[in-house]
Image (cartoon, rainbow, N blue to C red; front, side):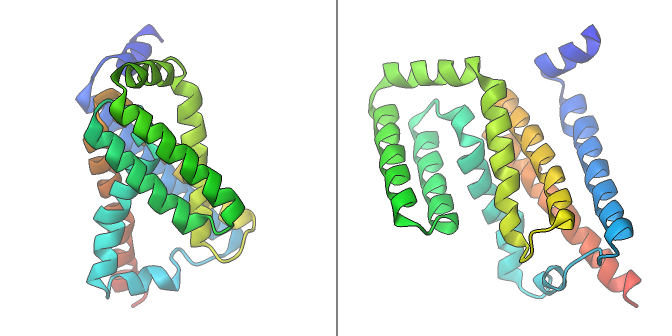
Length: 214
């Protein structure tokens, strides 16, 4: 147990980037196949198959969206310099405008975010105190951001049912993993793993399209 604990506390590239990531992939595949068998749903939606025919959507799925999602969800753990503060703020604004349509919700969130970002940007002492606070309560913020990260993916599905909810659990687990990587190694590494994670389902879609359908 002590050895496993040390794995999470100390930097271990093999453990963090290979073993943990493979566990995450296996869990994703198990959930995907389980929902297929239990609910008799198709492994992939029609929109997933169409994605391969549009290079701009591929670029969005594999690179652009991971960058935006990482800075908006995991940027909280790396607001230790001005560039990260700017990117965190811009990506959160993009998330707010994408998922929130009610002005009475959007307006106070925007004002609060911009105010906090300006203080973090110009006040070094406040930034250091803020980062210490996030670090002290890292597990709480990791849980919150991971759950929000998973719930945001509900927008990918037109119908909210048991099948949809089950497909969200791997996203929440992915949020935990990416938050862990961002906090331990830096956000560029969580972006890299997010890009790889988004590429794997696309490769599965390719295999499904060219082998299972024929």
